[in-house]
Image (cartoon, rainbow, N blue to C red; front, side):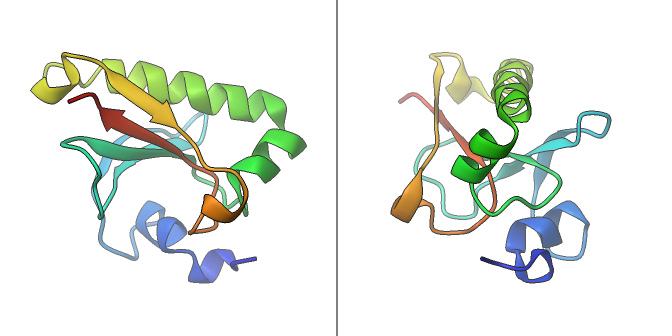
Length: 114
């Protein structure tokens, strides 16, 4: 398990490491950041601002927060369509469970449909 101090996402979210934050909700404690290794024109990561070792752990320990994260990702991506034309045709939200989750921090991937 990665310590929050060593987590690259925590570093971006607290402003210590470079990264582009697309949107955030300080009240609900979620952020949408740009993926530095994009798989599509738009490839963002929706995540809680608090460190959680994995998406699976978040889903199991706090199912309500997991569902709120999905709602946040949908709402804030839809709000960006005017600024990111590649989202006009739609987008996909995916998440990894288990071995495919390479960087330990709960997150959902938002990818433009191309």
